[in-house]
Amino acid sequence: MGHHSCCNQQKVKRGLWSPEEDEKLIRYITTHGYGCWSEVPEKAGLQRCGKSCRLRWINYLRPDIRRGRFTPEEEKLIISLHGAVGNRWAHIASHLPGRTDNEIKNYWNSWIKKKIRKPTSTSTNKTPKSDQTFQFSYTQNPQLDCLNNQELTTKSQVQETLFPLPSPSFIFDIGSSFQGTSASASVSRIDQIFQENNAGLNSDTWQLNLQQHGQVQTPELVQFTGPMMNSIMENIMVPIEVQNYGMNVGIGGGQIGSLDCLQRNEINEWIETSSQQCPSSYFFWDQAEGQLGTAGDEIIPTSSSMGTMLSSFPSSL
DNA sequence: AACGCGAACAACCGCATTAAG
DNA sequence: ACTTAATGCGGTTGTTCGCGT
Image (cartoon, rainbow, N blue to C red; front, side, top):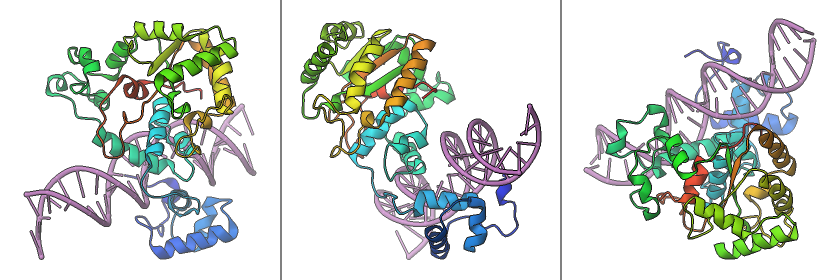
């Protein structure tokens, strides 16, 4: 394994950082800042490459770093964002103040190993190695019994079955926007917003979509398709972002929220791009409390939690 | 007490992108 | 316009620690 070009120097040290090295780096950065990382090692008296110093500072030493266990709210947000943007850890980290992309990535990688069960013996031999990450066992979820009877062994197979619609899909955790309300109350509230904004939509549209996808019982997963989305995004998502309509988008004390963190220009840019590229489908979903559980619990895939994992996000965002 | 194992975390590597010359 | 260095990011590996046997 070759060293990086900046680390080819003989004296460059590798491996874990000692407290003395940390101290030197902290002292230097707090005094001089970090305008040019390649100059930092020499000026700070460290036998490290600039890249290593940068990584150490960003991931461990900077003062605003937040360490310790992820809160359930953070976990929920990570799941939502990962469902939206995939493995774009830096993007996810930008929505979690004090958390680093590395930390989130590590957490996700260990978390997903723990929470997503290994493939069942019936499907193991048919599954391409590259897709094994996306295998689930549905045996504990009656709602998904239909899936148990099918040889759904890949991400794409599962996605096609659950959401037989053109990609990409996008999910908003609209349920968490209505703090303290039931799913049905959320529907009523969103219905009202539709009317207020003359969006030309109502909950009948929802129910139709729900029935089409077998989600008749609860409006946890609400899907909109095609041209509806522009008016929804303009009339609903933006007001949500600026917290009109009395919504509390934030979770965990109102400081952090997936929708709150999606910038208006990001959303608008994405709508514009994706609407040109394909008649996308979008999922608004209500991730009811308890479905994801807390840290240490095992995930029982449901329509909504499955949705987050399966949804994709346009690369343009 | 010693060992093995797995989880969690820290760090490195390679590639892509960006900025500067 | 091109080259090169610096930086940022995601994937991967290595190390440490805790727990069970």
